[in-house]
Length: 476
Image (cartoon, rainbow, N blue to C red):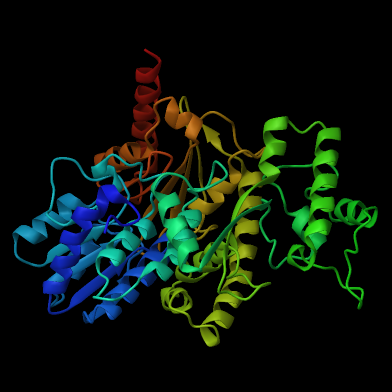
């Protein structure tokens, strides 16, 4: 079997064999949408393979977290959606005989150290930031874990959610190794790939709200303008309200009605002077989960990933995992309540950044939210701030927030244009944090760290220096 990602097949088989040899496994995963779907995929695969396991989640896999894992009585630990960046820490515990690690991750590995069972696309010439997510690596492992006569291709649905949650569809569709997983999901009847309006909320938002909040492509008079959105819809020859006078959702429209609305939206964008490259982003490849009920957050992969982000980031990883495992009653209701709170917090966080602004250094910009923005969502807020009037274009954004443990969480966001110019935020976060007694890592375009209280200024100075060297080196 070549599997969905042929480059990883042989090593995935070796990792699967090691897990089968274990009496039981401790599954440790990250808390974002990619981490939750990774855990959902891995736990389902372990259960189907009759391998006993327990699941734990970590906000940050630092030395203390790995030490806590080592203190358990598990001889085998499966790390999903993290572990690569902490290979040096993990390897020390492996050498001490504390546990044997199996890693399914896609983040930049720590340099100068390796372990036998390390499944990471970066080790096989694939881009972990754009071609395969942590959920994707976990899916490749799940396919290798299939018992005789078994079929784990239905788990491709979660892998696609994880990839989109990790923003690997930034260029309009999932590419590279992710495309192979999409194909398997389509074959298994759990994923539908199509062309549609690429606006968040097609399944659940009433049409005026859908257009009002469609700010990725800003259309003057409609985006951030409820009255303008309603006026636009009212003028269309499309029945946008149901028989009771309530606004329809995008999914409630017929194919012809969607085409009419999308065409009118494109015409308005052209007339308003929106650049052609941005207009092209209005329509593109979309992914729907075939087995989920239409009109729910779980039907659309973007809405599903946002729902998951609203759980573990508020200390309810158990809720997010339950939804990934198919719970559609109490857990889903709880997730929806958390989602409403999450959206409010993101809106408040972005408003805080707009009101307080950012400080600009030579090569980066930053804001310190203290305890005003929750540490688990400050990175999302930073990403939302990119491209708005609150930030400058062309340089990365760093965001700081206090943690409950008395440390400082750092999140960084760049762009693929910056990466092409030489930016590698994974290296920036790792090197700058370790220079002040912390630790970090991630991807070239987005990364994070944890540093001691009182070291923010020193960290910024070192990060600014490293970013400057990276961009200068590329221009030589």
